[in-house]
Image (tube, rainbow, N blue to C red; front, side, top):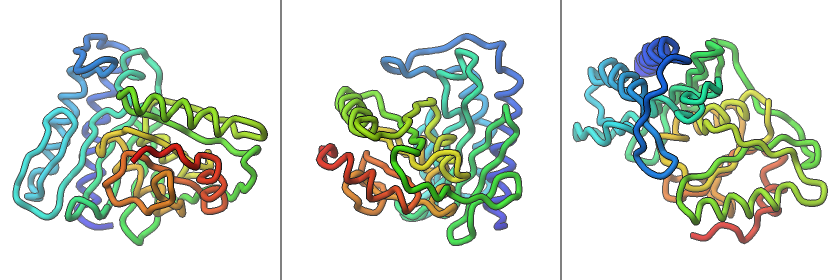
Length: 259
């Protein structure tokens, strides 16, 4: 385990303690955009993460703080509380997400921490994926009708339209069970540990998915956009699926990707 990964795990758990202390108590929120909220807990958790990671000298992209440019080819990508709406409502499905990228496209490591379940997922490039120290792997299910698929979308009108069209395609005929849970990072980890066969999203921000994406990939998932092009941080469309389900899902959603 690299020093950067150790530091990211410590930072995620720092944030997790702040979130746990506030969970079920704090109801105050500020609306950043339609349906997009931030709480004092988001801000405090993010500050704790940045305080832990800034010693590396890498640049930082954080959801609430924005860009801290340290003129480094490496950049921390931080979502201090992925699933804020769930947190506000008392649904226990949210997580801290941290990723390290190089040259704005290469994922080097990811950490996702679920403070409620005390489950810490992590991965480094070419080193496999883990939950609380145990190696995890994707499922081997190959039948769409027997699959569980997780799905999420951004807040733009186009994202919502694409999401609804995708949902219809995936559930028609012998379709899969499709679930939306409200935390992109944690849903990707559920794919990584074989609880679901795939995750699809459109319109999410980089900080929503970066940490979970490398964890799913290192667990064995194929990562692409909705036309099968390998992920390279240029598309708003993401599919992370076990290799047996990747092509059947692409065929089912063919033509939906707009750009």
